[in-house]
Structure formats: structure tokens, C-alpha cells
Length: 207
Image (tube, helix red, strand yellow):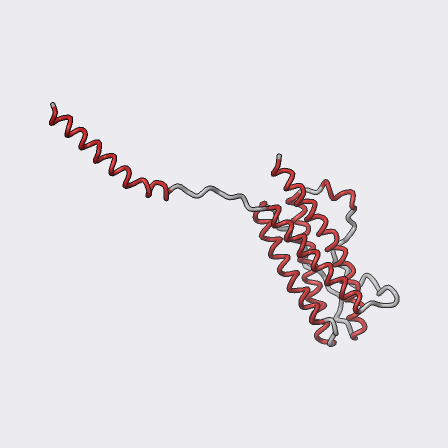
């Protein structure tokens, strides 16, 4: 009987040792807890980037301002800036990000047109225009990353139709004024939208 008990105790000890030896493997196989992306932080970054772009547009307008308002409606396919402040609190995350992305891509196409025209006529604002285009691309990339996180759909608007190439530097300046004025309005609206969406996300996280 003592021999049987000894064998049982030895077998139990051996089994326990084997289980303890395998414990690190079991714990390492357990997947790490999923961390939800910080949506609020990303929306705040988008708001700050948009604020920077708005300031650059305002600086360019100030540096090359006309004494009278420039001729409007050269660009037929610019996004319509007819948003109302009263609508901002009712905006939903996914469709709002999708529309802002479509508008931003449209401005990106228009500024690419302006950049080509500026190089041809040696526009003095070309260096700062290049800086702004680089920031627009960065903002677009950040926005696309955020859209993937919240599963927002990418819209497929038609390619914008551009006006004929401007014949003179004065016409380039007129075109840049109209484009920058509209883009400043867009940035002002987008910055507010990102800030409101960030606040909503904070409140939903607390609840």
C-alpha cells in the first residue's frame, strides 16, 4: 500500500511539474487585450492641422491682397461652403468625415492646378503654396486613417473641371485669391467640425 501511495504521489508531482513548465507557453499564447484607438486624440490632431492650414491660407491672402475683391467663379467645381453653424451639433461621425475627405481631395486637385500655373508665371507665393500643399496631403492621409478606424465610406465624386490656364501672372493671382478664400472657409468649418466630433467622442466615452 505504501508503495502504491508513493507511486501516486510521484506521478502527481511529475504531472504538476510538467504543467508548471508549460505555464509560460500558455500565458504567451493568450492574445494581448485589444486597445481601442484614441479617436479623440486623432480628431484633435486633425483640428490642429486644419487650423495650421487655415492660418497659411490667411497669410497668403494677406501677402497678396487686392484693393478690391477678386473676380469670382473661375472655379466651377469647388466645394460649396454653405454650411450653417446651427447644423454642426447634429453632424454624425462617418458621413461627416466622408464629406470632408471628398471636399479636401477636391481642394487638393485645385491647388495642384494653381501650383502648375504659378510655376509657369513665377508666382511669388510658390514656396508657401508648396508648404500648404504638403500639409494638405498630410491632412488627407490623417483623415483617411481616421476614416478606416471608424469604418467611414470614401465618396467617389467626379473629377473637378478646371478653368483654362491663366494667361498672365495677374490672372494667377486672381485665381489664387478665389481659391484661398474658399479654402479658408473650408478650413474654418472643418476645424470646428473636428472639435465638435472630438467633444462628442469624449462624452460618449464617459457614459
